[in-house]
Length: 533
Image (cartoon, rainbow, N blue to C red; front, top):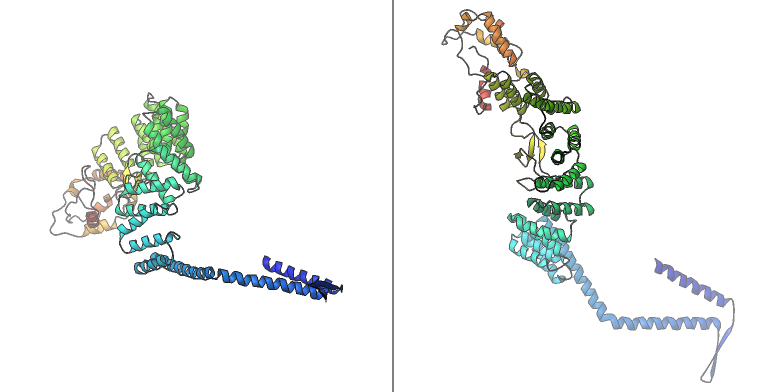
């Protein structure tokens, strides 16, 4: 565009010049070799312009003839290069589509048309073709040759890393990833693998530096970086708790500031502060974590903040936690445990039953069984509660990649992934309690109808003649406490005197050493659940 504008300006200037000369007539006299030439000024100007144009055209022709060999060779070289890049593009598309034969063909064609030192993508296409053909050894050799080229070094490390992952050699894979992470910390695959290696050998300082590098290169978001730093600092605090309490305290407090709702960080920070007799600050950290999300480890450390406290003092601290988070199952269970230690059985029973109403789970029934054994020693009720605990959903625990752990850990023991553990209920055993009051049928009509049918081959029921109404009332009251009312006194009264009984059924509540109820057997026995004893 600029060249066209400049050309138009020159033409316009020449036109103005010729118009100016035409308006001013005159002659030009030239004397040369004894001759005198006289022409008009316009003719002289045209002649000068024509001579200049002729000289320029002659110069262009001579230059073109002089450069013609180079021009011809460059034409063929450009044509050859275009064909090579076309073959390279087709080969890359074929490799991406999984066509190994076409990728190998285009690799050879591109290598003939383009020099590999001028276009590094030929090495990549050749390695991809080898992988598609199953020649992994040839692909590894090609990737290793890329390490000598600074431009291709990261690509070679990436290929060797993937090959090591395919072979299951995690040490080699982490080695290649570590080299790549040093050269380019912004590479996600290299940084993640190096982070796993550092955490596997408990190099928390190195892992923290790598996370800071990821944050500075904006590879991960700020919130994700803070979360990782909190996990690493918590792990560092746990490792230094007995070796360097001061460093452990610094790391734990920083982790708690980054994630105040992270229970392991709060527990580590509070434990470090309690060791230095700073109970007030440690308690505030635990209270903030409890308000965010109640956790049993937080409650355990909070109630035992002072080792010399009496059981009533611990009960009062548990009630303080309950006031901070009302109508929560974990709050009720915390108070129930403290009340059981203080032998306040009425409070313990009330809070344990409240916890069951809010969240029916295994730990609540086990706690209620402990309370029942400590208060009354009624082994029948204890066994009943234990049987319910066996069938109840499990309590929340630290779960990562299918592994259930009693304690939090920074990395998964299966995959080595950082921050893999989550506080949730394991999925191995879920379901409703079969002994709950809501699951019991309210109508006794099917029971009466079944009892009214005579059975010829059964012995008579003698218990009905001997048992009085008080006996049945006592049994009914006892069953009502267990939230199961299979048979009422009215049902017995409706039984004809000449009716024959059915064979006795097994006990609904199993002994504590029983492995549990088989779901298939329970499904088969459910139609005959209510029987006369």
